[in-house]
Amino acid sequence: MSDLFPFAQDAKAEPPVWREGEKLWMLTRYADAQTLLRAPDAEVIEFQSQIQTIAVKAGRNYDCLVGLLSGILFFRNPPWQKQARASLRRGLAAIGARMSDAEIAPIIDEAVASVSGAGDRSTDAVPTLANRIPILVMAHLFGLSEATVETLNRQGKGVVNAWKRAMPLRVYTALEDQAAEIDQALRSEIHRARQDGGPLSAFLDEMGGYDDREIVGLTFGLIMAGIETTSGLLSSVLYVMAAEPRHATAMRNGELSERGFVDEVLRMAPPLRRPSARRLAEDQQFGDVTLQAGSLVSVDIMTAQRDPALFENPHDFDPSRSSTSLLAFGNGIHACLGVHLASLEGRLLLRAALKFELGLALPDGVDWDPDPTFCRLRRLDLQLNPIQHRLPS
Image (cartoon, rainbow, N blue to C red; front, side, top):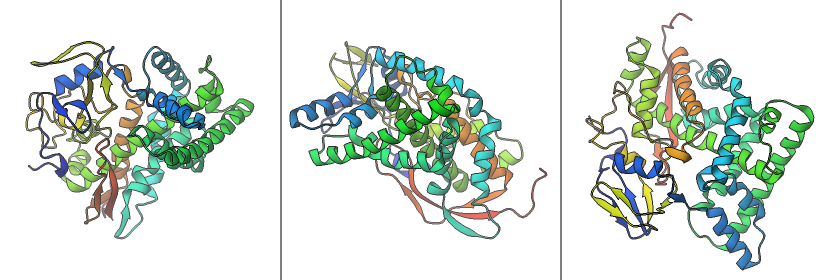
């Protein structure tokens, strides 16, 4: 069977490769990738510090931009990262009941029902389902409006992408303006929560020891992480379900688990394909290759999860595979805090599509994002064909 993801057909797990254009080593074997991601002394690049240095040299003020980036744990190292991670865990535990199947399923059911009207029609499932569902879920978790979270997500995309490369000062200045709007919006929500209570208040009660600027950054980082990677996963779930309808039939018949399907999507199409690079604190062995201390090293998770050393017929979509520890949401101290919620949203989206007996047919509108950092769709035109014979409720 050919790979459902054509851009990954040439993915080949091999020894570390030097990328001259990026000035770093790229790891593509599963064992090498896992070793790097679990290495406690391999430091990520703290891009917010670089932007602060640019601001000082240019006589500019990028405080809001730096503050938001500082709250994204992928860009931070211990001990601050470790302490903040523990605080966020406590905050999420305080609102954990809102992350249950019973709380999330009705949100996803309503979103699917809104696009599954009678008759054949086409919809771009990226904005209507893949992007909208995680926005609705994050709004629910923190007691925010859909419009507020949608605005944060839309404006935050540019802010998050500030780490990718050195940019002209005018771009950083424009991003600072966006960051200032996000900062103001979140400060207003935090102030309201402290006055009126609610889920955000319960979350904030576990965030003692941080000033408001840090809390804004951590809350922003958590919301963005809860949307960006999850939307990539959901778009891939819908794509595979439409491209391989036999799997939907198997799930309807109880022959295939939703978890197995979602895990295989995560293996073949990890939403975060390349996490931020690490700098080695000491010499590190990767198979027969030793990379020296100070080397900048990155990981291609998509290729690593197609390593034939672990996965038989690695380019085949096989949701019946035996469980293997996936790297799709990172590993080690920088592993994503929301992996269980993202997986839950994927399974509940599958369940809703089956419940509403939504037959998904793929026309020509499939457009993958060329960004090598992520695996996600920019457009997914689906023909919605509700099945005539409904299952018992």
